[in-house]
Image 1 (cartoon, rainbow, N blue to C red):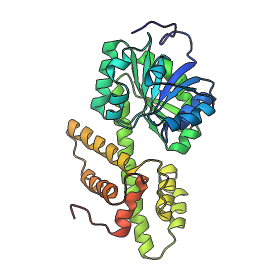
Image 2 (cartoon, one colour):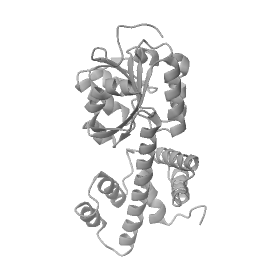
Image 3 (cartoon, rainbow, N blue to C red):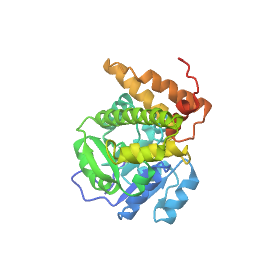
Image 4 (tube, rainbow, N blue to C red):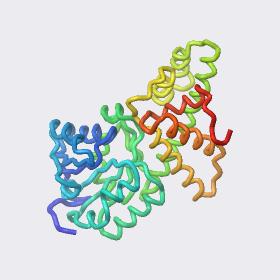
Length: 306
């Protein structure tokens, strides 16, 4: 790695950082960092996504290398494959001394172990920091952040993570722990959305007020953004714009299934959810919000296993 006056943990506070990946989640997260006073160098595979951030005060990167050169990189990319394509080892080895990579993507535990081991071998810090929350939460700085990795890198990244989230939950020095926790959260949400689909469809068939039902459960047994947000979306059949798409939901479900296989754990409901999500993607579309899985139950669309 090249040398730089920018140091890692234990050095002066960093104000210049990079952010790569400016989709539905990355853009509002980067905007929060700009608002917190950081000089944020931004890059995205879709150049138009950069324009709004630059207008808001960010610095345009000509390439991923410009964002890496800041010495402290945050990334919100869609998948493990995209991460490998945008941030290959040879590109990261050109980073300055004290470099830290904070990876916000929801990826599998094996991939997290791979990226953390590579960072350790190449002498830079790696933090797994997947987030819980939709784009509106990101815009409000209300994300829940799960952070794990080399303690010094986590400590140095904490001010930025706190600028983006309402709370940062530490998951220790093993980076994959944060990813396993995030995968488990999304597995739980998939169950909640499908349960809502079934309950709301039952009420619809009996001519009851489903909007009132969602209000009631949020005022009693299930308060919170999952049952409120997804419940209202299902009642209205409102699945665009997608806060979290069907294809990403399927990706994360498969990560949970893979993690369970690695641990020797049987997830009895997982094959049904897989059928539902695969059918939603193939018959309804990849770009709908994953609450659209409700339409499989509502419309009585047959599943491959039925």
